[in-house]
Structure formats: C-alpha cells, structure tokens
Amino acid sequence: MLILGIDTSCDDTGVAIVDSGQWILSNVIASQHAAHERFGGVVPVIAAREHTSKISFILESALSQAGKSFSDLDAVAVSHHQGLMLALVVGVSAAKSIALACDIPLIGIHHLEGHIYSNYIGRSDILKFPFLCLTVAGGHTLLLKVLSHGNYELLGHTRDDAAGEVLDKVARHLNLGVPGGAAIERLALNGNPSAYGFPRPLINRSDGEFSFSGLKTAVIAAIDRNPNLNQADLCASLQQAIVDLLVTKTMLIAERHNLHQITLAGGVALNQTLRNALQYAAQQRGYDFFTPQQDLCMDNGAMIATAAYYLYKERGADSLDIDTLANAPLGIMNIRYRHDSKYQ
Ligand code: ZN
Image (tube, rainbow, N blue to C red; front, side):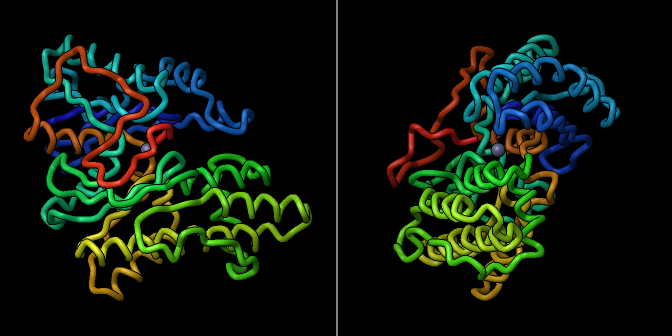
C-alpha cells in the first residue's frame, strides 16, 4: 500500500512516500531554519508562507525520487493535529486536494503519533505492545504507553518547558544559531559535564512529571553572571542535566509499569549523548531500546505515512472535512494534561 505522507506542523516541509509502512521510497524535507534564524525562533506566519511556497515542489520531488506518479498512490496522510495552526493548514489543504483529485482515502494523523511510529519503520515485527515511548522535542516532553495501534496512555509529561525548548532558549541566549540543540551538542563535545552543578528538578519525585524551567533559569542566570564563561563546559553541564532527568524518569516509569521495550522519538532524539545514556540504562535492566535513524527523528512525512498505514487498518479513512487543531491531547489521560502548551 503506497501512502504519501505530509507534515507541515512546524518549520520543516516534509513529504514522503512509504510502501506498506516499511519501505521508504522517498523522504524529502525542506528546512526553514534560514528564514527564521534572524527572529531567534519560529515565526508562525513565516512558517506558513514558506510551506505554501515550497509544498508543490516538495511533492513533485518526493514523487520523482520514488519513481511514482499521483496515480500510483493508494492513500494520502497528513499531520492535522498538534503544531502551528497556520502551518498545519498548508499540509492539510494539500492533502485534501490530492485525496479529492486522485479519489484516494485521506488519513489524518496526530503529529505525535507520527513520532511514535517513526520507530516502526523497518522494525514492525520487533516492537511488541505495550511499549514505552519517550517523545521529546522543542514543543513536548511526553512518556506514552503504547497499548495497541492508535491507543496510548499518557504516563508522564512536563509541567512547564519542554526539554528541547530549554536547549533552544539557552542556545539563543548564547547566540549559537539554530537549531539550538545541535549547536549545544557540538559545543558539549569538548566540555566537562560536571563543571556546573545545575539543578535536576523533580528528579527524585516518584512519578512521570518533568520540570525544566528551573534548569533553564539557572543556566541563563549563570550566563548573565559571567559572559566570559566556558561555553563548552556550560553546554556539557546543561546537556548532562537534561539527559539525567530524561533517563531517570523514563526508567522509573518503565519499571513501574513493567514495560521492557523503550523507544525514543522526536527532535531531541538526535542527541547522541541521550541515545547512548538510554541505551545503557535499558541494557543494565535487560530492556530493549529503540530509536529511529537520525533523519527520521526530525519532523518528516515518512513517519506520517507509516502511522497512516497501521491506523488506516484500525480506524479507516477520514472525510474531506477533517479538522485542524493546534493543540490536541493524545490518548487516555491518566494525569492532568497541559492544555495550554504547544506540543509539536
Ligand atoms: Zn515534531
């Protein structure tokens, strides 16, 4: 089953063609970093304008790289929940047009479902329900129990900033450019992770709740106190604090809920120190650990097409009047969800 997947939830225009949720025939991503850099963050109206100007070209590129035409497609899938409203609408409009013109099913996917299913590409036969997924990026930090296809239980989340948001804000304070997480990781390579004893909020609390705002405030205060500080040491210490928080809480929840398969997804999953630390912690406990290859951690259309392959079987196609929501809870809420946040 050939599915075209579209993601325009934030500042990457992603279009991919995936065969049966397993084989990526093309995965084209156009980054908007250059357009937003001088503003120090993603500007929604600029994101929408960039998506609008690029989407046709990216669609053609994805088809041509896959050696396919519109008439070969069996379905079109799109991120319609979670992200920047103005940006999401561009992808949803494109997907509706394709579904209508080609007379194929339209499948709406929650953007975070896409991140979860990025772990399915190439290993659908290995992952067994239920498993734990840590999704961590600039707009969200969540621990989800994946019960079955399309069924999730929220076991942990951040009460304030997302982990990736802290990395982005500190990078901006240090004028390191975008993407901030990658710049901090590069500097951290030559730094001492024990140089600064930054706080690890809620690390000893016995539940899945995260908090990163106190850490962010402490790091920014350290920068403001000493503009000539060793940036490599600061970045390494910040990175270590975030890794400690994410690994400790993930293992706590995995043990408590008896989940022996752990997956990592989202933009911060690109961080090699985090990947290594989770791998090591999982191995120590005899758990399996999976994370997507690096180009599938960032926002992309392949994860949307993959999720659509499995979820279409469960819940069928959507109608052409499918909605678009910037904030949409995902799964069964067994803890209070942060409705005012901007998960992406
Ligand atoms: Zn994302």
